[in-house]
Image (cartoon, rainbow, N blue to C red; front, side, top):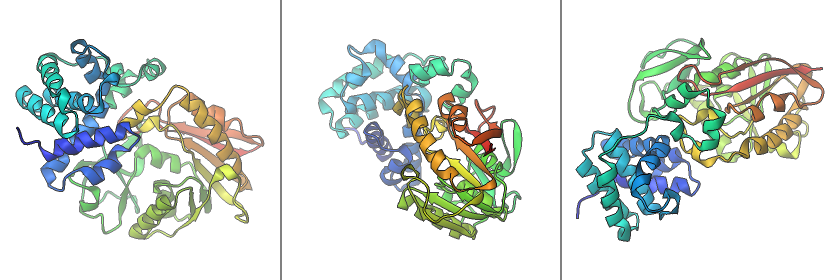
Length: 393
């Protein structure tokens, strides 16, 4: 019996948990081994399989007597991991098959190990399709038919961007200016040379920067005024961006744990961000008063960040954008009660779906869309956002 690499085992366990509703990054934080190389392998395999799942399944299909979704989880995950390694990593086919068979056993699917062995030995001699639309569900492939360049980039590892409190490039990291929608975003920088956990990067403890996509930073830059309510603030990047510019910011979120993370980030960055917990679906916050600007970066399908969180693409249903839009209208209406008479309301989502965009912003009685910004589809490595500025009619 071969020894299974612990990174591969962690990846297999994470991928099974993702199918049950878990989030890949959260799972890997707990499951990936501490040893650096094995930990990196777990992340590489897990995110790589999720990004290329459609093409992997298409390549495996001719060698299976039933659809992938009807296989038990253990052989299904092992087949994807084995083929990913054979075709998209430097692992030789024989080793990829051997490890996939052992992974099947360790995941509790020992009776299917022969199937995994036979299928991978055949499928591993072929190649993956060049059709980028295989790596999103069919309904999204139809929706994004004209966005092939961006969909192709979502199959690649996401670049990391940091935003600095003073707008200058971070001294301890190798970076390049970051852009969104074709325009350089001030104070945002792609990290071009770094490895390991972000918390271990040089300069992290000094609190001069935080991780934030340039498109998200560009959305925050739409907000003006001295007193600002960030109504759906987690993970906190937009609040940090506004506070770094001197605004008085109140960050509100539904979940206490996410509020704690915002507070920890603000403390590390030495930014005076205040926090409150509230569920906007219950209405406005009693006794809160009004603000110069209210930012509603609303809960959404998250389909604009699938390069960073690839499991999202396989989790969403065609009906989800309309369902999310219903909630977004409720949240926006409640938060709008806190906009000062001459203030502004900014509605944003990290989704490129039309149902979650202008139609939601335009539905708010008493407000008119007077501006906006979007990065859909992204022209570079940024996420897909859309944002709208509303003022009282």
